[in-house]
Length: 491
Image (cartoon, helix red, strand yellow):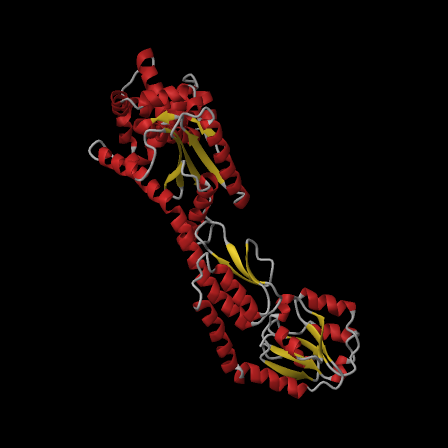
């Protein structure tokens, strides 16, 4: 049994100092302590009853020293007989160690208390099991859906003789966290300081049933949006041979294909926690994405989400043109990201926003623009601020230029020889070449920007130019290489 239960059952025991956690400690037995030396060898989970002679010294330094010898696993210290009040030093020491100090009233029957502890721990199991079974039957007799949830909570409250409610924060000792799938945990809470293990077990049993019901309710409410998101993803990833069929399925889902669309793509970074396994980090990523999506969409049909947990695509669609489309979109997106930053203060995110586009082709375009703006933000190291495609300036023109098949093929063919330098050297070579051109072919400035020695720049550039077989003294060749490396960076 728990110390709190024993105190509640035994009027002759008075609490001198004990936290809620200390009262939650298990009492397996009572152990009479005749000398301070015996304290160090006390049994685990035993309530140490100091003999009257030792208890009479509770205000002395000897008691303070003896208290320090108590093993961490004991249930607590009980004074007996005509005990003095413990010194302030002893009280602080017990509080620091979260060790309960109680006092037995003069003449208290220690043997009867010990028998009661034994009966509860050994002989009282059948009664406890019967009580737990009755509480579980209350749960099983209700279908804890939304319409019957209040009835179940009322019956549990009556059976446990205290309020049982759903709370967004665990403000009480006994609270069971529920994962409803929404990314925002709630708690089934027992409004009492009780340490009753049976009540806690019943609360846990009820919590699992309620969690399933609330998760089912959440998934049913979000099924149209999620299903539409899957179809949207399918359409955006489809090629010429499958896009017509994918578009038809998207239309049948109720998605306003012919309307006006605005898209954003958000990448969430540094959510993985060192030391946690991959499954825990995946669930953390999933919860973060879910919080963002739920805050932005807020159950409105005009919004659709797609993508993966690490990269979320959000589309806002309107049947008619709305002059405030972009403004509303940005407000909602910023609100969702602000909420996520409250929950994850160290979170870094990158976001690209497209422009308002009409029809099926516009739907693809705004999603592509959002992806391009996202890549441009990543290339520029821009985090935790929205990056709009229509505000990219020259980078926007580069992206559009690089999207032309012939241009892309020409640039890829031009830079393909860099592969001869080795797979690990391609990125370094492109970065060195771009920085060298951006620096006006100044070796000293290039070395400074790359944080390397000038001889390293010379060595790299000789290898690069030998591989590419280009003459940077030729203005046309130099322009093509410079545009190509810049386009690759932002695209």
